Image (tube, rainbow, N blue to C red; front, side, top):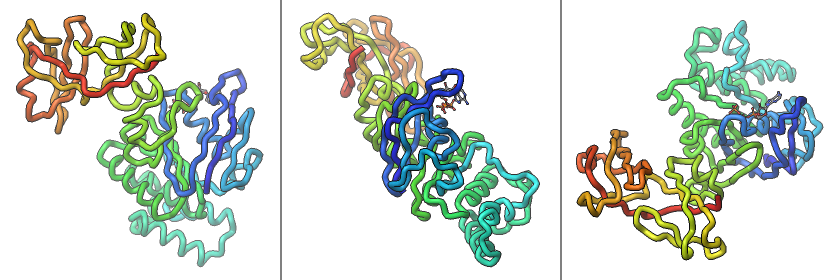
Length: 343
Ligand SMILES: Nc1ncnc2c1ncn2[C@@H]1O[C@H](COP(=O)(O)OP(=O)(O)OP(=O)(O)O)[C@@H](O)[C@H]1O
């Protein structure tokens, strides 16, 4: 099912303008991650898709049908929330069959569907347990099975793994992606965790103060950020302000060209990813910077270097070379890639 927002605005009673005239289209079968800082409108957008909030302006379309005025139960969407929201007094089996009983699905058909989902979720032996007898990851799989039982064509996830520890979280997100692919649904999930969004989503919708900053595949929002906000929010970055002189800005001893439309004297922001700086050993006189600290991160190490102008940059180096950049070492910097935005 496609999902489309056309000029959707949401003003809550009390005046908070949470979503500011947003338009986007989600394709059939896509998995989209809503990513943005706290308060950027992610949950509100998800709730508007679900029909749990009504937009103040604009329209929502699901599968080519205008659903703006339809209640949640008529939208054929499945919801999975952060806190599982399982019925604590019901067994796993009863939780999963809940939506089917509501729909008065015949018993044999319901039983077959529940067994099929429990098998798929690797929960067959837990059918008679109660939620409190399960781990967080298992509870989340029950919540997913329950959402899937009535065969929704859209699945909505609100921070589904936020309460789960790292190892299980990684397993679950791979599992959710597999479920999405095998069930042939369209999915939208809210997350704070950009690694999660970049890993799992086909496209990421980056939100900032109720506006869409960028909507694109993970590699695009990372490698071709459209705005200063996206460049500094997605992935690690060094962000500095520079004044343009003779059509260029000076960064670590290099004069980088600026869009000719930007006039001399104006200020721009330059963003450099830590992986896009090469270090060379240098004498104190020739060096651009000195290493302040380094930290082992597995396959790479992070180094913080202080330039002679006092800026502290984060630079990533292969861990195998880490010993070359111990605190106090003088370094020459070569910036290999950068983004420039108006200030
Ligand atoms: N029921 C409500 N009544 C009034 N204001 C609300 C309500 N729900 C959300 N808001 C406000 O709308 C804005 C967007 O909230 P929303 O929950 O959509 O953001 P979010 O990006 O999901 O944030 P978080 O990551 O913290 O969950 C915030 O400023 C929030 O305070």
